Image (cartoon, rainbow, N blue to C red; front, side):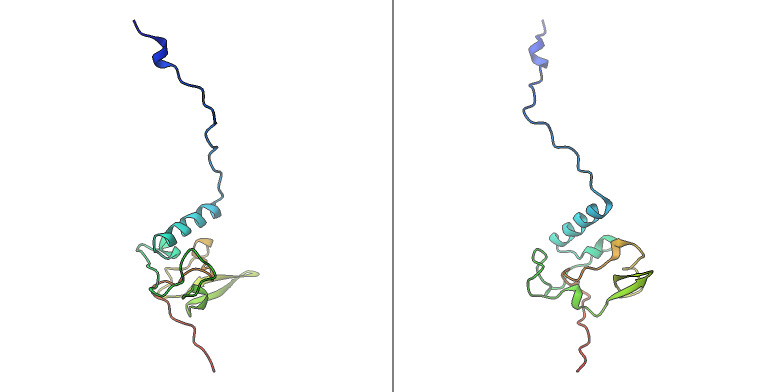
Length: 122
């Protein structure tokens, strides 16, 4: 004889959280932050290889801390597309830039291993 009590499911006291409805921008931002936490530059997501952070890069969790940042790199340039400017990395053969938001380079990002300071003119 099988008891029905074996298959009773207790009532849930709390409903499970609803699935997150994140925009593509929010999902990309989360992936970029995860890359930073793992010691990789956010542009690693668009490359076919990891792009490590510079040894003297600013800590990824603090946007005000001292250290090297993309905003001070000679390869970060503002490119004009239409009425706006978009921050892109101009290092190398162009694989780090596209016409999409995924290759926009934030000033506060910690510098990658290819960082070079902007030329300082006297």
